[in-house]
Every structure is written in C-alpha cells, then in structure tokens.
Length: 117
Length: 112
Image (cartoon, chains in turn blue, red):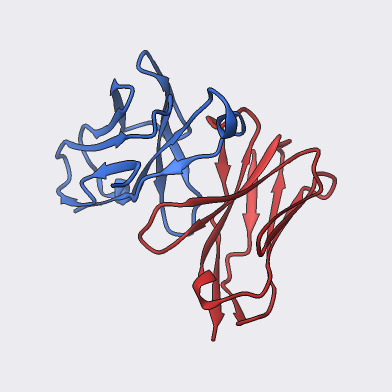
C-alpha cells in the first residue's frame, strides 16, 4: 500500500458542485500539504498543516478549504467548483521531527485529477 | 517575486550519454535545493537534496551542483537509460518544507 493515499484518483464534476479530495498517510509525518499542478506550471501550494490544530494558507488558497481531521488525514474541499480549478491535485507530507524533515523533503501521493465542466 | 526557471523544451538524448538539466532561480536565497522525478500521471519522487554550503552532491548515477553566486543548479544523469525518461522538477526551500517552491520541470527522453 502507498504511504500517501489520495481519493478519488479521478473525478469529473460540474460547475457549482462541492467536491472533497481526501488524503491519508501511514508515514507518521506531522506536516501535510495540498498542491495543485497545471500543465507548464510548477506545483503551487494551496494549504499546509503543521499538526491537527495548525492550518495555513498557501499561495493559491482562494476557492479552497481544508480540514485536518487527524494526524494522518488531510482533506481539501472546493465549496463551489469552477472550470479553472480543473487540475491535478497532490497531497504531500514531511517530517520535521528529525532526519530528512529538517530539510523539507516531501513525500507525494499519486494525485487526484479533477475536471470541472 | 521568487521565480524558478527550468528548460521548458524537452531534452532528447541517446542512451549511454550524460543528461544535464538546468535550474535557475531569482529573488530567492534557498537553504536547500531539491530535485524530484515525476512520471506521467504520478506524484513527484524525491531524488537528491543539496544545501547552500555544498557545491556538489552525488548519488549513484546522479550528480547535482549548486552555485549560489550564479543562482543555478545543474542536474546530471550519467550513463542514461530509457528508464530515466521522465520529468525532473527543481525545488527550492528555505524554511524546512512549508515554503518549498517548484519549477515547472524539464521533460527528459532517453532513446535506446
């Protein structure tokens, strides 16, 4: 099983619908992130969380919200999806409690491809 | 604003040759520079990290250089193989992960 699991892997929806993308991890890492990837652009940070009680906006948080339900679970919601939110979404984790975490190495899930019609 | 530039054009090389990918950045002073590999439809996978006080780092067939004066990193794959074909992402970080910024990546094709 993957260490960072995203569901669904693919989703097609219509404008105005509410969508939730879920992420769970078995790595025991404290930090979790949501990124968006568009063709020709670098990964853009949407939200990040240092622990269950800490949620922070990234560079493109407008139109998105998140919930850190547990240490291992971090979900991304689109309250009212619009076509320009069509993209590939990645969840990632890192561990700041020693080792590679100090240097920010990120562990990514397999991605959730979202299409908003 | 902070900016990372990687060659947007794909790099095509022959098997056995050395592939060299470039990452340039502006308006940033990273503490760490990372390289990731991404296969189509998959999540990025961490390859190598180099710190600001390091000039070069090696791992098997991979070599990364980091020139903070030129604000540039070079990523080399020696004795390249068709299995090395993928997109390679450069990422910069100063604060331990939560402000990592990524380049758009360079697509590498290695022909047998």
